[in-house]
Image (tube, rainbow, N blue to C red):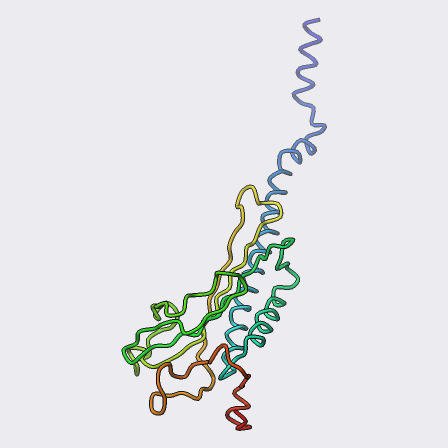
Length: 219
């Protein structure tokens, strides 16, 4: 009996059947984790690119005007959410994306303040009169070291990304980006008007694009 058990033990030790299945069972969880992680990382990077594209597009569309009406601004912000497609911008009734656009101007000493601000999310707009450190958004011009008498359009976008399978590990990740552009045209200047200068007026009673103002001379 002892000899039989010894033989069976030696046979079990040298038996190679099922080795591949055992190795696969050991390796497969790590392979699955690597695959899922790659998919989630790819989705996150793609969404981050779209967040940046949205911030740029909003600033670009607003800066092409000398004045913008409330309805036009609503249309710009609503249309810009389409850039996130095919990713959802809402989870049920909750918005996953917040877009805030502000007009910022500096005085003769370079002190920057918010002239107007609007957002797709209630309470997310910047406060009018809020001071902003301009170096956070734009480099200092050597010819204008104080950034005096300038205006810019500041676009800020945030997106709440929740990984489909990695929520318990990472939770909700907020993707953010900001972009600024100087207005393309303006009716104001330090030589013939008062502060703020070179700004985009909002909310205005009528819309005026750069083409209408500079080429067609209709506003």
